Image (cartoon, rainbow, N blue to C red):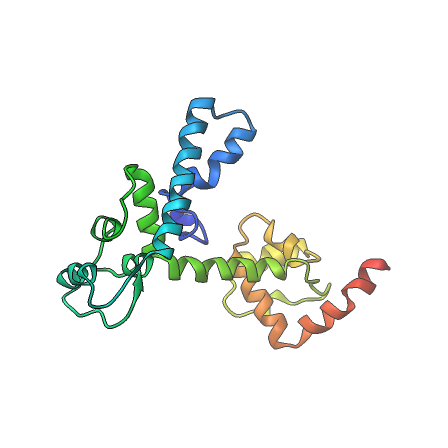
Length: 209
């Protein structure tokens, strides 16, 4: 699968493929002991280093602050954690990791720490989108729902949903070619029409009948 075709590309990145998939591969017997040990060590190093950077602080006016100021060409006026500094575009992991303590030697782990720090804001927002959509998966779609009136849906998506008549958003999401963006549009339409609240309130009764 090409990540360029994925809906949540910031989460499905090439650099974090091992972190996302190695554990599942191990469960299916696709990863040997040696590779599993290497992966576990890398994962642990990433977690420990992220915690170190979050809990290590640089005070304004300190010698460490002066080194940072030379890189960013501006004065630090307050206390910053090393993680805060790493999020700045002017600084790299190598720039800040040894200000207090030592940088990790594993280059792959260090790279992952830097990538996740630089894009943390975008990644968190995208994860929130994923979690929000999942929270509505069991929302019931009315049997007579008219997909043709939902702005933004392609004709192909409208035809697929109309033909399949999924009972819930979760079932709609499993239809081939139906993207999370399409599900979001249906969800927004339900909210705007005030149907979502009624369906949520009625869902237990409908499921029991």
